[in-house]
Image (cartoon, rainbow, N blue to C red):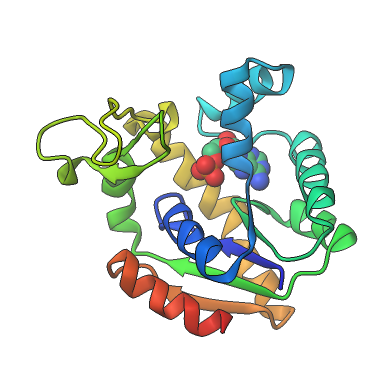
Length: 205
Ligand code: AMP
């Protein structure tokens, strides 16, 4: 089974992806994670990606599609979960040329709560754990491994506004695109991670 996780920034795609990966044995392909890896390694792609990511803009399609193509080849184009790709109609059409998608899960969250979720998000640079700042008991330490939690540069308030605009203008039209293909399943992302996962699991079982 090949699936796509759709949803605005802050909808909880990453959190659900972890659970789906464990429970349904799908390879997790997150374009955001791939770009962050390149940025840490200071590769050419990383430098280019940084210049877009820090402004809350999309990395050019040409680069992004190539990266996904390579990642899909590694999976043999089977049993994968795309998270953060496609982000616009062009990418979705390119994807249709290179792989077969079975289901698209749209995690839907009220726009009003997204900014708070994203700006309060903190990540552990050591183990990858993600939490909201209110869950850290005033200490900025990872509850799992004790490392100091960090804020992604594009989770700062000034960048979040443009990320949400990009989502509305370029990514939200994918909902209609996949509805027309008969592949769209919408799940409310307003509950706890476990509650949301219970709904996601029903779609995938
Ligand atoms: P994410 O971790 O999915 O929120 O992605 C972080 C940032 O990486 C986005 O705001 C974009 O700048 C870039 N990015 C991730 N996926 C894509 C994509 N499919 N197309 C273009 N840019 C992307």
